[in-house]
Image (tube, rainbow, N blue to C red):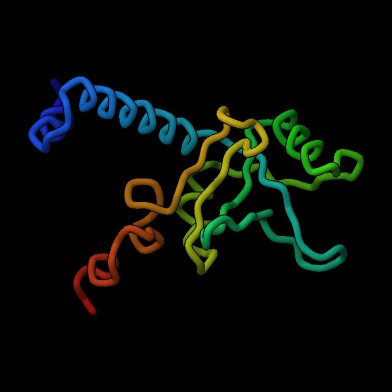
Amino acid sequence: MSENGEEMADSGIAPARAAEVAARKREFAELLGEFRRTPVLVPLGGDPGGEQALLTADFNGIRFILAFSDEQALARYATARGESAREWTYQCVLGARLLDVAVPAAGVPCGVALDCADGSDGVVFPPVVGIVPDGAAVDLDDEARHGGAI
């Protein structure tokens, strides 16, 4: 059993459940690594004629940058919104750049939603430790976030 599985088993979680949780953590880590290495499409939103910004959506107090794996995924999103007839402007951005640069620059709790119109095939990368830089993670208290310098 892996170290994570042993820790979970020691915490009172059934060994089979601990193994399942450890396997899902490994799968997500692989998915995160692939996302970080992959260019994705990020639609631009904003005022027509004004400054354009990465398209976002807010959910439960968290802002999510909307990203799509390809033009077909973006088209499904446009169709789901009833906006398939309009032109969608987008940028191609490396997943790592979204997580490491765009998320902290948002200035509010922010993550990334990949292929959000694809139901269970979509993925959410929340603003937590191990996904975004510590300074942008919502699961750290202020002291931990600033290295105890508060």
